[in-house]
Amino acid sequence: MTPLIACAHGTRSEKGRETIAALVAAVADLLPDVDVLPAFVDVQEPEIDDVVAVAASAPVVVPVLLSRGFHTRVDIARAVGSRAGSVQTAPLGPHPLLAEVVRDRIAAAVDVAGGDHIVFAAAGSTDPRAVDDVEAQVALLRTLVSAPVSIGYAAGASPTIADAVAAARAAGATRVIAASYVLAPGFFADVVVRAGADVTTDVLGADERIARVVVERYRAALGAAAG
Image 1 (cartoon, helix red, strand yellow):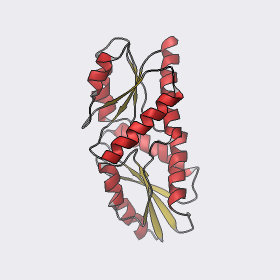
Image 2 (cartoon, rainbow, N blue to C red):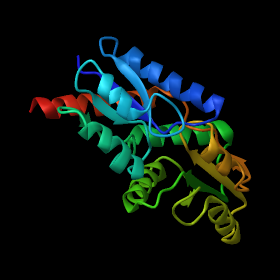
Image 3 (cartoon, rainbow, N blue to C red):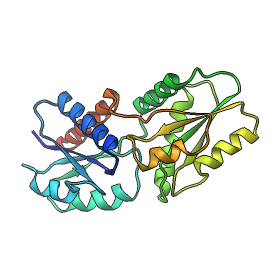
Image 4 (cartoon, rainbow, N blue to C red):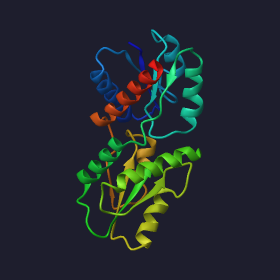
């Protein structure tokens, strides 16, 4: 079978590393006949270029990232382009299953009530396509929650998460919930926590539904290649 490379960002956080490792393991459990290989674009090893080079055959690379951006456009694309027959899929988001996970993280943190406001707290990117992906993901979330939802970014785009929290309060929200749209503990998750919301949800984590999105991206790439 065609190898699947699950390419994540990478983090110095030990808990973050454990979370991504658990997610990759969940993908492997769903694809017992496929060689599922982890790779990273920054901070951690093995690096994506090296994993593409040593895979048993030309792989399908699934960006374990929540939107398009620099890493999908440059780092992963470069690695995939270095080996004939390799394929890069879309990142994980936007996807309805991710909206379900965010909704469930909110429900686990708080009972949403009248007067609440949700700030969808994304990592952010200077790439406008990343902003498009986040806005599409928020549109999916809005169909699942009763409270109003706005967007804040940890970096690369505006408004910041802290500014979005402040704007929600200024508009009359009695409680502001920061819904963390981050896969694992690490730098961006910490930015969400420090943004000043009344409630901050847990990261998305190694949820089985996210593993299913990875598998869906992989199988779609195989189907497209088969014509």
